[in-house]
Length: 351
Image (cartoon, rainbow, N blue to C red; front, side, top):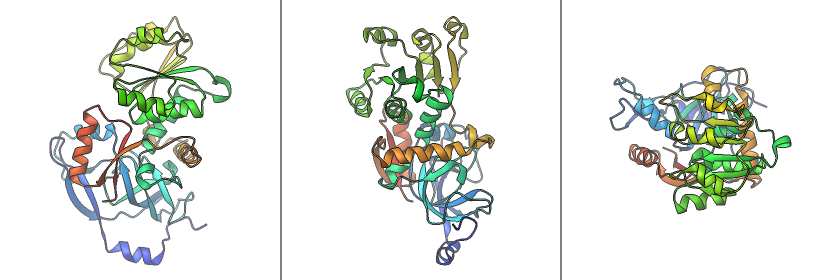
């Protein structure tokens, strides 16, 4: 197969004269800026992608908030995309020009609020065949996070742990929505999750949750009323600080807790000692940021996710498409994310 830095001549002629369109931020309290710049050239393992659709994530708003000094060149955010490969670097071997791929990218590089993007081939995979671009774009970041949390951090082994119980705190959000499905379909666990509104409870049950309790009320007493075994695993997709004490009380002996959200305080880890229980963090960008030797794990995870989607074993968590990538739609999407009322994922189509 043709795999490296060659491109179809007509395509090369077409886009070499074009400018890449993008939307970025120069300061955290400023409106996003629309601008153009030269389309980048891929080298090494990079792929040049023409973006078909993107999705937004809470990390987008957090990175925006971190821009406290005005930037000369706006920072392009966004880490969920699907698109077409236009060109590949000389070390690229996994795809062909023209392939449709989906990926979450690398938080240390320019994001996907743009018409084009460079992405390392080792953290991308061929997009699902049966989904619309925006449905595919909704999946990568949350899917990698959920997969790593369940199978790398909590170390769930489906062949041995079938029938155990997991508590997922924050089941209706992007990561929780995928984690519920993977916990049921791949790990075959009993799934208890949390939701606080009728529509979010209904969404969690649709995705496969066996029990739903309210994270705005006392988790310990609600869990006990279920009259089921203590959770062998807890995945916290919500505020770690708010739920640490409850998680420490609920976790089964020799159980594992995984959390996603940064802590602003310190915890008494002695609360886990007598249970020989563990606590671990999951950060999806660790592998691409540090160029770990197992970076291709993201490629393999997304291959698995695409197969599960194409086989109908899991569904896309897309709930809303706002329209094309514009400054106005990005602002609206960020506003919805910050409301903490978002169910599933929000997507946008090509710029």
